[in-house]
Image 1 (tube, helix red, strand yellow):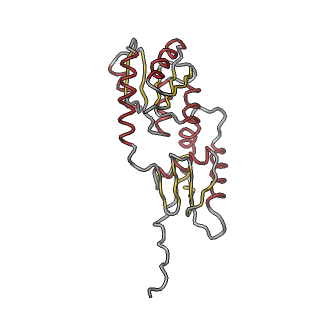
Image 2 (spheres, helix red, strand yellow):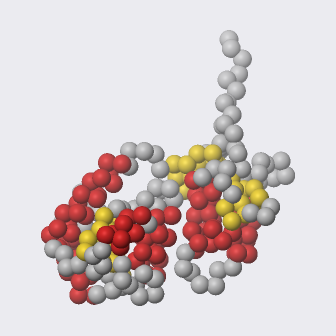
Image 3 (cartoon, helix red, strand yellow):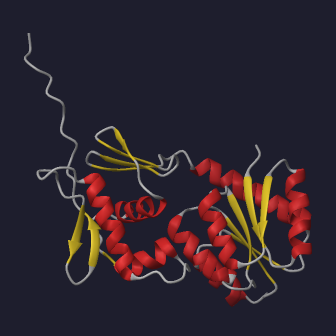
Length: 239
């Protein structure tokens, strides 16, 4: 089965070689050459796997790995010239799924990519829908439903809601939300989070009697309110 693969490698010659080998396997491959572009492209294209060089300009590969791991479980294969055990353990601790040191064989790289894709596909039997009461967040379809009705959200609103719903009851600070949702985007103020939360409430909490969806935790930040179980429909009188 073909896969969508993002290759982030600052050496354009190396990136081209990796792309050739992966495309021979039938994959659709995109390449970027700096860390900031890697983050942006991963968020917009949602690849099935990322091949990520550690030494890149703007944002290094370890920081890219750390940021993307907070947002998704996309398999990440790290490439680096650093061959020490400490470097390898650091990369794996930050969320990388595999690690290769340079120089490497392109054939071995494609074999490792195949193995990562097999493991990832075997693990996707679990549903990609987060449920909280009548609220459903479908991370695969990038869709939010409230009592069955699709709610139109912006990308940042969706990311904030998915973050809160992924750990129900946990209060996230504004700084944590900025780090996980906006990453290395410049000039993002904590007040920006407040504006997105206000829009989320307006879309999800309709009417004066609507239950609170996103709670403010004073002195801390925001959390998803406990929605309780979905009420069972009234079956009507038994005849």
